[in-house]
Amino acid sequence: MEEVSLGRRMPVALFASMLAAGVSVAPGTMPSSETAYREQCMATWGTGPFDSDLAADFVDGLEGLTHQQVIDVLERAFQRVTDSGERVDGGDGAEAVAASALVASTLPDSPIVMDPDDGLREPLPEVPASLRASARLALDRVLQDGSEMAIGWVDSADADQWRQEVRQILRALETPTDH
Image (cartoon, rainbow, N blue to C red; front, side, top):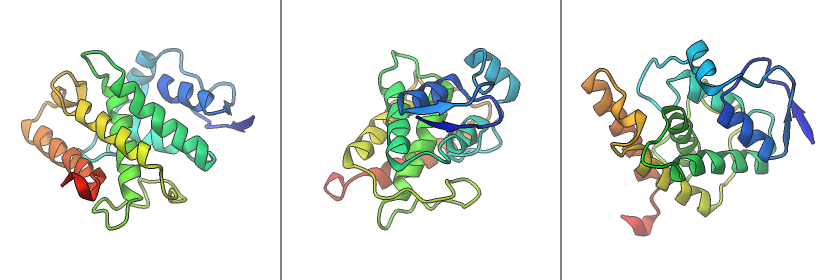
């Protein structure tokens, strides 16, 4: 099992996804609880898919993983959102939006272009069509009223901008026959 040392704490969900993908995470990186993690370092500075500590940490956690491990972690990020009950956790939603943007950026002629400061150092190779479908389902859930991300904005202009950006990712993920 490959070991990755992140040198800091990470969200519980990301930690679990990495373990399930066969990555051994070095001691000292496991948070005591998801709530403790969020209280310690969650911040949002914009409406883009990578404009929060949770999203940035999620992407950082993918560095050094094999292609298949990255695919597995992305799939689990989508699965947490689609399998959630009526309420979609804000952290899970932030990770699903970031993961969806990563997937959309791999598509030919995609309007979603990764800023080198936001994305992975190495671009993702082509992703399976099933991952694209999972991303779309997750984004649909993140946009619903039961999503903490959809209802958690203080400023309605920011909320509108965020919805617009998520819908742009969703459109990029549509197959040509979906239009």
